[in-house]
Image 1 (spheres, rainbow, N blue to C red):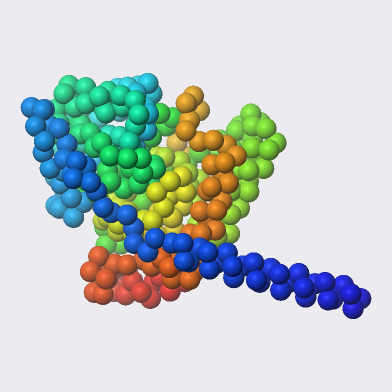
Image 2 (cartoon, rainbow, N blue to C red; image 1 turned 90 degrees about the horizontal axis):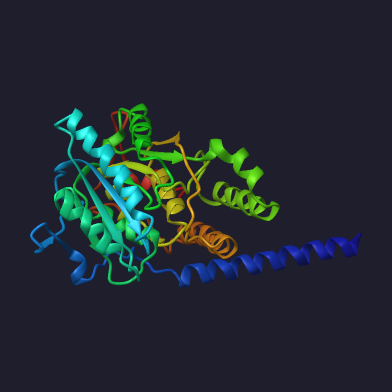
Length: 342
């Protein structure tokens, strides 16, 4: 019995030491501020006349009803199908409701193929007021690409949509309704997440035991470490109000696959209401996600997200850092008091 007790104490000490070491690594390896820097070339888009024109800022007054941000890395083959479907839907909406205005921002994330060239064809066809191409000098990762697109958008609402078209674009109506269910929005902030959780049983039947284990392990880590109440954090179809997008994306640190989790973690810390909405989804060939290594990288990022906020290596700052407040249910609450548990 004494030996067992000693072993338990030893195991606990080893665990504590390892936890402290990992927390220290997470803290001291963290980039303190979100990467909001953009190269000079990334500040401009090519207009219909072939001239360089400066992108607007997320901090400007919105001039469109909807901005669609499409992160694209080596997507010259898959992008046309998605763009054709999206633009057909958006043009139809504009015909039915003339007051509806939109823009699509294709963010070429440092592609090595002709992604920008393909996207520019749509800009020439529909005009640069409706389709703009933001070409990043080097690859930032999906989260970094979406951030740059969001920060250059003009919409009152901002939709993230993957270039592969895995989610039917007509499901925009579903996430729009999801936002409406959250009204009245506190300080004009709300997020509607497309979700594939209802397809989980079917996907399990088609997956190997190992991939199913990885999926459940990832879901558990998301729930345990970061985000609760959202079953599918990784669906690339999310609709945000402009204010919610501005606050969350200017705070976002993660540039790659786990960025969705940090985005929703920040949103929950700021008490931004979130709706999860079932959408149609189809597996499209050509995914950039490498099953084992990508899940391993995301698992590490999940742990580091929690530890970095826990050790205050990362902090959720406000737009004016000291004075910004959120109005909730007619009561004004300092953001610092809202995020004390984040």
